Length: 210
Length: 210
Length: 210
Image 1 (spheres, rainbow over the protein chains, first blue to last red):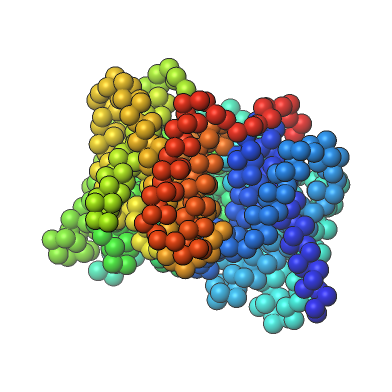
Image 2: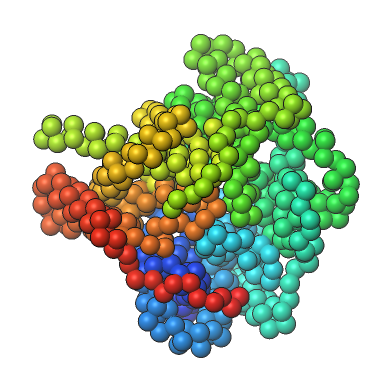
C-alpha cells in the first residue's frame, strides 16, 4: 500500500493548497492586506485540524508544527496576490482539489479521532469538523454567515465520508480499503453536487421577530 | 439525594433541548439549510461545555461524546423545520427551559471546574462560559453581535449562580444543597428579569471614530 | 536581572490594561451593556494567551487563573464607562501601552511555546497569536472584519519580535538579552508604523463574484 500512501500525501498537499487558495481569494476580495490574506489562507488550511487535535488531546496540533500547511498557505497567498487572473482561470482545478481535500480531511479526521480511542459519534463530528472547520472560520473572520451552513452539499458529503470510516472500523473491515471507498464516495457526492447544483432544503430567510 | 439527581438529569435534557431550539429557530430565520440548522443547534447545546472542557483539561469534551446533546439538537432541528408554528407557540415553555438550562449549566460548569482542581476565579469564568458560550457562538455564526453582550440579565444571573457554588465550596457547605440554592437563585433572577424586562445599563451606540 | 523582571511585570500589567481599554472602548461604542463591556475587555486581554496555552498543553490557561487579567479588565471597563472623556484624552498613552503589550506578548508567547518543547514554526505562530489573538476575537464579537487583517503594521511587528526570540534560541544566545532586543525591535516598528501611518500593501476591496 506504499503507493496508496504516496497518493494520500499528494492529495493532502493538493487539498491543503486548494483550501488555502479559497481563503486567500476570499480575503483578497474583501481588501485584506498581505498579512490578512496569509492569515486567513492558513486558517482555512489548518483551522479544522487544530480544533480536532485540541478536542482529542493531540498536543501539539499537527497544523501548527507541520511545515507544509504554512508553506501551502504562503504559496497560495503569493499566487493569489501576484497572479490573480491565473487563479481565477484555475477555478475549476481548485474546486476539484477542494473536493479532494474535503474527502481526505473527513477520512483522516475521523481515523485520527478513532485512533486516539474516542467513540464513533465523536469521530464523525470531528471528521466533519476537520473537513469544514477551516471554511467556517474563514467566513467568521470575513464577517459573513458561513456558506456551508447556507447552501450546497458540502458538509453532508463529509458526514457520509466520516460515517463510512466509522462503520468500517466497527465491522473490522481492512482500514485502507475502507478509507479509499470513503474517499471516493465523499469526493463523488461533492463533485455531483457541484455539477448538478444540488442543495439541501432550506426555508429561505423569513421575517425575524427578535 | 437520588431523586435530586433524577431532577438534574431531567433539567439537563430539557435545558439542552431549549438551547438547541434557540439555535435552530435563529438559524431557520436566517435561511440556513438542513445541515446549518442542525450544526447551529448543536453548537448552542454544547459549545459552552466544550470550551470549558478544553480549558480544564477534560478530554474528550462531554459535549462531543454524550449522545443526548446530539439527539436533542437533531430533535430540536426537526421540530423547528417541520412544526415551526408549534415551536413559535411553545415560546413560553422554551424560555422557561432555557432559564433552567442557564441555571443548571452555570452550576455544573463551576462544579466541574472546581472538581478538576482549578481555582475560584476560573470556576466562575468557566461556569458562566458553560451557560452562555453556546449562545455567543450561535450569534457569531449567524453574523450578529451576541445578544447577551448587549441586553438582558442573562450572563449576570449565571455569574451569581457560579459565585454561590464557589462560595459554598470555600466554606465547605454541603455541595448538593449549595447547588440547589444556586440553581433556584440563578433561575429566579433570570425569570424576574424576563418578566420585568430588566436590563443592565448600557451607553447605547454612539458615533464611532475609527 | 531582577530589575529586568520588575520591568517585565510592569509592562505586562500596562499592556494588559491597554488591551482591555481597547476592548472596553470598542464595546462601548457599539452600545454593549455592562457585562458585554467587561466580557469583551477580558477577551482582548487574555484571549490570545488562552488560545496559546490550549495549543501548547499549558492547562489551566494563565489568562483564566491569574487575577490581574480580570482586575485589569474590570478596571479598564469601569474607567471607560465612568470617565469616557478621560479615556478619549488618554488615547496616546493607551496606544503606547498597547504597543508595549504587543511587543511583550509576542516575546513571552514565543518563549513559553519554546519552553514547552515545541518547534520554531509553532513558537512564531503562537507568539503572534498571543499578541494579536485577543484583538481578533474582539472584532469577531463586535461583528466586523478584524482590523489587524486589513491595515497597519501590527501583526507584522509581532512576527519579527517572535522570530528574533526563535533565532536567539536557535543560536543559544542569552535569553534575557534576546528578549530585550526583540521587545525593543517590535515596539519600535509598531511605534514608527503608527507615527508614519505605514500599511502593508492590500488590493483594496474589489467586486465579489460569489
